Length: 122
Image (tube, rainbow, N blue to C red; front, side, top):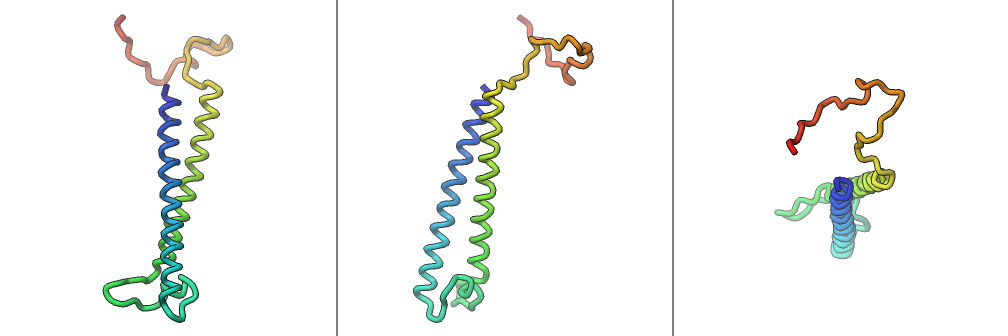
């Protein structure tokens, strides 16, 4: 049950990161295209961010910051893909905690949990 919940939460995170990454990519590209199109003597967003903008706009390092934000989203997205893969592998191998199988070569002190669960009255 916990594996299913973890998989669901990871899937939701992946979805929102994918949407966020796409929005940042499209928004940055649209902004850059409009700046390059509308501002004379500018051929790239790198050039536009170093120019002085009209008041009240502050355009210093807008392209670098948007690029950094997009990179952070995609790195986070791929890290969550690794988490999802690990959860799927763990779920497939059935690594739920089980006390039904005892290791014959282990002593009782080795097989006891560190923190004992409270007994539930039946």
